[in-house]
Length: 157
Picture 1 (cartoon, rainbow, N blue to C red):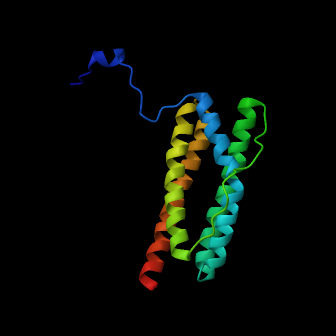
Picture 2: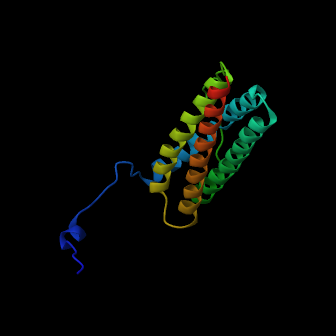
Picture 3: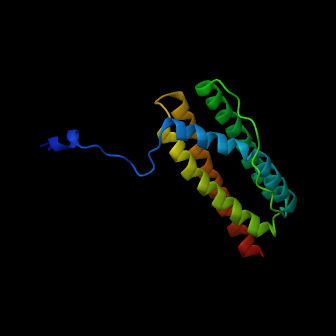
């Protein structure tokens, strides 16, 4: 027997991370504007990697991130008719050690998932929302790869 609470149709449920379309566009712009610092950070991690395998993993993440930035730029352009310009005014902080950099990268990927979830909730149903969902899945994949690298370097170092 199927039981349905007909009161459900009368409730307004809002997830805590729900956002407006305008705020989603602001978050997209912020994500793209930090691009230069991200590039410097990944390049530094790649140089610090102890071997080609680990450098290759980080390069694949960096390349995914470049694609994400292009997709976010495209979404922004399609929805606003404008290009994203400007860069973050935060100064690049050098990585203190390879392991510390991996840990920072892991936390950065997890923070990106949270930010992109907010973007996802502010977009209309369709290709833009689907694209951001794919980016979120990539960020989760990146977090798993960083966990792998952290584990590898904690046990080997």
